[in-house]
Image (cartoon, helix red, strand yellow):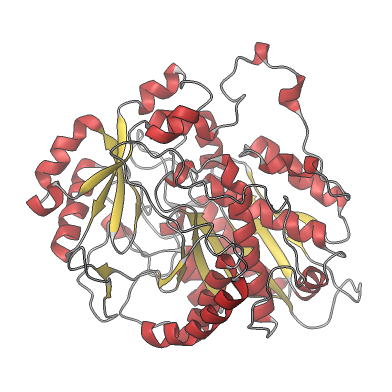
Length: 531
């Protein structure tokens, strides 16, 4: 990436240059089913890494040496329909790590080993944990520290063991007003999970940000206190601890878990394609090297199987009813609801799913944050030409190909199998300027947006379907108003690169109330249009 290079602290070390120095990320604009099919076939033939795809474009990472081969497999209409997103991938990867990561341990000083100590008293020091992305070796002790500092409403859990034997850590945050050890009736719970795909570091940091904000605001904010009294909140920041650790130690762009497959040199199963509801493993069974390899049978991925078993045990033996499931990913700024595996079948209670999803997007927007799209996880859009508006495909149109399998998702499993009525996959910042390599300075702004969505979800489940304006109660989250608030998406775009307008920082001139009213009026129109 041209822009970030100018502001980077140093050049990447030889290890990163040798692995990523010859790679680029290209964005292909897709307008027809034929183009989508051709690109999907080429990706499969060349074993390419699809970073993200939406209803209008696909981002693909590949070696510069492979670009001619890829273009040779594509129709003429696609050969010129691509633009580089990142020229200097190794530099962007290097900049995503904390500054001391690649230093010789013998040269590091004490300031490199600071501890992260949550405090009961607000101060700038409480935010140090969110100034950088953190490895699992820091996250797990930090979670234990939260449990010890806030024993009244925080308990650390172990969802199970990963393939390589690591704990899958989680925090259960909640308090029973009666202080009864066994409250009457079933306890409602909400799962907020991240890190299913190892390289999506912002999802892990965002889960931690939401957890920390709710934990430290309990007893201070009436709205937050009510949320913790009415629900147990289960925060799982690293569902894929083996893969996450591997991104810190070996390959920053690793996606899958680290499970051995039938091919010794191709490890890993995609955790979000291995669930047993509408598992679609036939499409990748013969290719364990695929980034979306679903395994040779449903639930072959150990970590997905562990979470499913834990969740079922909670509902069957621990008197828990899950009210919502939020699966955080990156990137593309979307709120997706079931189903993922098909557009032909309509999920039960679709209107409720859509209403809540649009409210989540609005809550994010009202933080002076990003604009998130709301879609079915299966949806595709055709753009006939560059001047026309996107045309939503009808749900009964099954012939628009995707770049990877969409069955066997956690989203569909929790919604259909566990009957969790409000299940969403939320794809966080950004829309392509940085992709999976979102700078650490965006951790707090992204967390603040997601926190607003979570607060709205809790109020929605309690029957309040409006949206509080900022400053009318509720937690603002950690960090000052100015910290990380500025629009940083457009910083330093390089020559010849795509500049993605995420539309942040708009409407900061006091017309927030008017905008809120307009968005409130648009919700019902949007629901009708989408159906």
